[in-house]
Image 1 (cartoon, rainbow, N blue to C red):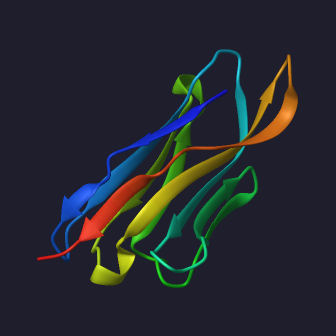
Image 2 (cartoon, rainbow, N blue to C red):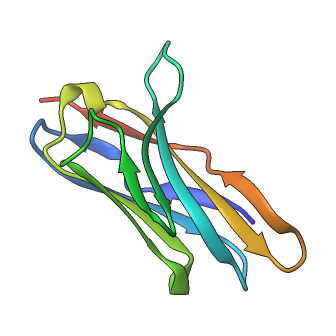
Length: 118
């Protein structure tokens, strides 16, 4: 299984972006979805998490970001609205995925850069 993020780019403050994360492979069951971000020189920060029990968001993004998934198409998303300069970071998708051949394992994408600037 590989995770590939897309949708990053340059956006003005107040704008929106939707990050996508595609899980390659077939017969996948996506159990947990996480989005992290990392600013230069800072540790990686979890911004959103989606489990079968619900969603959790970092206080800094609550009310602005929405995490979701499309199990039928092996897709995961992070909708980001009202973006601020401090949201500038590389965003990483992570997921706990079950496959018949490997069981449940954690996978990570390579990241997509989001730059919020006027």
